[in-house]
Image (cartoon, rainbow, N blue to C red; front, side, top):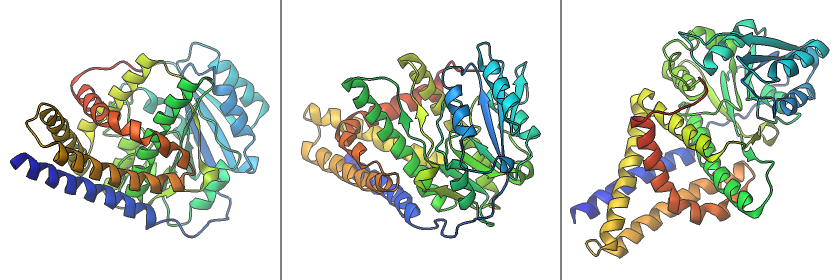
Length: 373
């Protein structure tokens, strides 16, 4: 009976966290709209991105926003392919496009942060706007972000679904599973930002005032961590309590990104993401630890029930209650992000999510990974 009590207590705490996130998506939303055209500096770090960079450059050039109100700073981070050639070409033909190159890896700022920091140093904009080289922003991306930046908003995150160039039914199904995972992550992003609490974000679609970056001393304190230019920086900003954080729900602000990694690269990416847990603030560690413990007890109870040492009815009851709460929260996110079709993948994804979370949580925390340095 002790295990039953533990499971129900963990379920109650888990449901409370999810309902907290759900409430955050409803409240503390941006209501006013800013029509004053602010100057944006789009910062992109690119390393050997010749495949998708032409798409991004074209999308940035064709933004429905005055050319004299934004600049695009593309930083080639030690690229060895045609990345530099592509950026230089756009910089020659468009006066608001700028080419920068990183020749050597940084010491105090490693990886992508070094390139982004260089771009920020050269920027002239009031607002810094970030995306990745393998992304495809919509034509009203800047305009949508501009409307969201009212005078009291300092930091905005946006939604970024996956798209693919591959055909086939299996690939379509796998993309659906991956985008459902994206949906769950961005629902957490939106819900926690609704409470003005920075938990996580994605650098594919991110913006903040340049003064925020300067006032918190940029990436100082997180510069030697290989990743985290998005979530770790957001947590640093959030910790001060001095800035208003928000999520942009406007569909015109959504920034799709291309899925193009092989299986091994995706595994390394998930390990890299999991590795950041040790650098998170205590409250976020506690929240993710709660999920990890709850999932671990569910795994234990599943095997006990399988071998007749635990009630199958109790296990199924707890699992279905978990399923119901998660579905209800994801439904809210799917309505906001206009992707209700993704919910058809939920039953299958639910079966794999628990081992996926536990395995990559452990691998990220206790093993090494390989990634762009």
